[in-house]
Length: 153
Image (cartoon, rainbow, N blue to C red):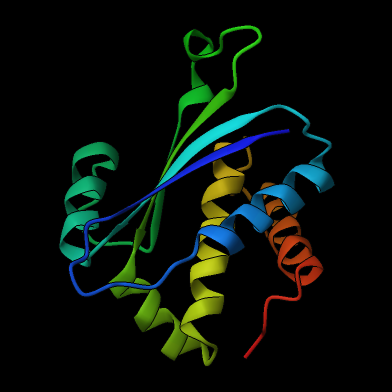
């Protein structure tokens, strides 16, 4: 399995590198889910203003949020036999991540890993529109982060 992960940073003063841990998260998620395909995805780090614009334009929700995923596999037209699965894009608000890390009493690093894992699971077909699906998705998030011993502070 090969993973092509593109990280794009739209936040000028954000310089942290999450590529290696995000690759580990993808590998662990694929291991747990039995996925062996080559994958392509991107992560875009944005500020609250930009994620608010995206949320309003695409989800018709007029507020900022922490993470938004755009799954390309929602449509069969994006899969080409023998090619890597282009699973989509994850937008993470750095501002929201900082605020939530403080609110939940754990590190910014853990919050960034949690948000990425959450977005990744959306790209892989998980959702939390009802209580049962939420339990499944949130349990899987926890299992992935725990398997990698992502610090819980």
